[in-house]
Image 1 (cartoon, rainbow, N blue to C red):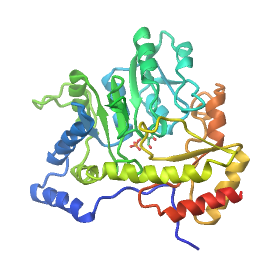
Image 2: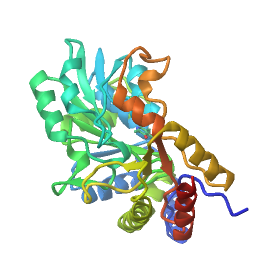
Image 3: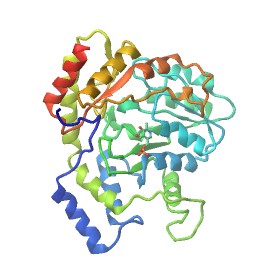
Length: 360
Ligand SMILES: Cc1ncc(COP(=O)(O)O)c(C=O)c1O
């Protein structure tokens, strides 16, 4: 049997380039604590994004958690049910209630037309997700949030490297929280960052990332440990150099999938603008869950592991509100499968995967 094909594999820089960063750690003896590599990574990312405030943290989940804390959110937070569990979990973890709003059937992002009907006097924020990197309708969301005096945090876990009208997508909302997990377009193994225009919020996030210490070493806030390590930052610095190359490579592979699968009538794809996507996932929606399961089994029998992102629709989980009906999200969740996509995936594997799908 041919070798195992996972749904994703991390993008890794040439090992000798990473070793150069490890040598710095061995020389300085600094492994964490806002060390020189974390500071350099923050500087490089802010140049890349053209955004002055980048605060690197230990994960995308802690980036969301710090964002919720920094904005003092309470009560209800409006979000999407079509996302990874981390989004809704961290809202609950921070003692707020996730209130789910159904998604748009084409972009699969929160449907702006349905947000206002869920806003109450307990709503403190909207927390949309740029799902699979396709930008949310940031202008409509901004208008709704301003009119109703609520904050916006974007879960931009998938959306590093995406621009909209020449601006990084991470510049929208009060704070964007991005993930640098190993499976993401840009990775530091584990890691993430908060991005914001607001200098006061930046200082607060920096403090609560580090137990509540301010720049003068006074404890002035209730904080936690969400620091990024130097080991992770070094990997990030080595990876950042290859980001555009990795993105272009994934784009070519994504487009190859589309060119082969496009003619199959029982498959649909996410709608996005060509230059506003980072090709970190290869999601396809089948006509029925039955077809999806057949295809998943067929691929598995051939050592290919496609994954059901995001299933089930989060409103269906017993820890949330299984009584809520969110038909678009539920319908898409049941029928969506992410096919393998990563920069070292051979083109022949993509052709083989498409052949199996066509056969089913
Ligand atoms: C939409 C979304 N939000 C948040 C996260 C959490 O990020 P991390 O795994 O870096 O904590 C993920 C992780 O994949 C995600 O997909």
